[in-house]
Amino acid sequence: MSASRTIVLFAILSLSLFCYASMKSSNMGVKGALLLAGRGLFLLCLSSWLVSVLYPWIRSSSPTPRTHPEVPEEEVKRKQELARKEQQEKHSEKASSYQESVLKPRQEFRLRKKEEHFYRMTGEAWKLTQGQPLGEGETSEQHSEEEEEAEEGDNETPNQKAVRRRKLPESATRAPPPPDPPQPKRVVVLPDEPPEDAEGVVRVALRCPSGRTVRRKFLKSHNSLVLVDWLLKTGYHPAIYTICTSYPRTPLQMGKDLTLEDAGIRMDTVLNVEEKDPSMT
Image (cartoon, rainbow, N blue to C red; front, side):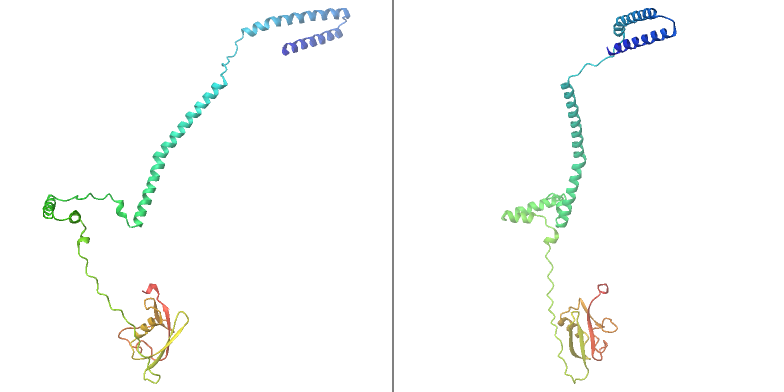
């Protein structure tokens, strides 16, 4: 409707401009201009009538575009819901298959490793083995011997028979070896201190790691191991501590066949108590 109105207005405007231009360019009078305008209006009306008659016929004869039938909104929602459910079912199937084929074996493997580690730490690694059925590997002779022993031991109680039939390892049936006799405890006894004016007297001082200094008199003829006993009496075990000279700082050579004089103690001496070097043991 708006298109036809626009065409009519455009035609009237064009006709008016045409009549005005014709009147200006020629010596046509007012009567001629009115006649020309009437003819133009007649032509305009005729063309409008033709357009109004032919346009519907042309429009009806032209092919119309195919339009899809409108689908109800409920049907669209139902199809969307079905598609969503199918997608969810596919995802759940993938998740369950992944759990059965990957996650579950991985969890069982980790649990088995933890169980093996636990039994090894607690000393019960035998629980990890399949074991051996009772009586496996017995020969017919063993069965016959057991039958003879069972006939002979009819007077035994069921517990005694079970103990006799049970296969024990050799270590359980073998008598234990006799225990070693207890070694007598060594009692540390230091020799008495000699008097000041005795011949061959030396004064020995021990500087302890705690800062305490212990002094004592010995004879040069005493065995050098008396210093080890003195060290033990002082509270320092010879397995951990040793006696060293002051300068140069070296371990004192001591032995059963060495006296204090042989060990280098010929006069009053100051010795140090030091921890043993683990690399030297």
